[in-house]
Amino acid sequence: MTIHVLLVDDEVDFVQTLAERLRIRGMTVDTAHDGEHALQIVNDCGASVMVLDLRLPGMDGLEVLRHVRKQCPRMQVIMLTGHGGRKDEDSARVIGAYEYLNKPVDISQLSEVIAAAAEEAALQGAE
Image 1 (cartoon, helix red, strand yellow):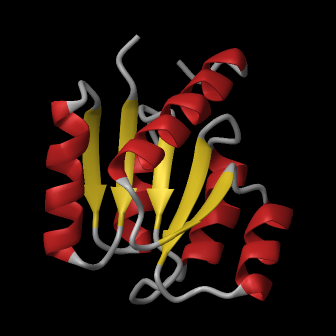
Image 2: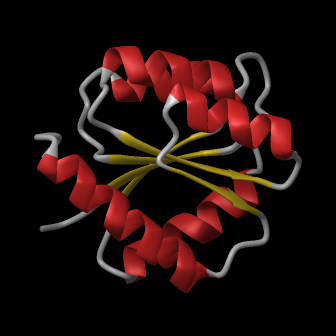
């Protein structure tokens, strides 16, 4: 099974680098740099996993997470941020985040979490 990931982060260079590293690991990757664009991509529920930054221009990551839970509830969302605290983590988990990770993150660790999230999405029928 090929894992389909949507990366959402306003740091363009970070997204490009991370996308390339995930593609090298055999994943299909789409990218968005703001919440509105991410939700447009989510409409087709093509990706099984979203890696989502907390701080985004316009709609923040928690708001995007709320919309994803409604639009495509089987999609698993991994929060990945360099700016969040315990309160943000608690909020993300209550809303339904699969995992909450802090930047910088080891690519091997992130890949393992993405694979586990994709497996969970497949069990829920997202693939």
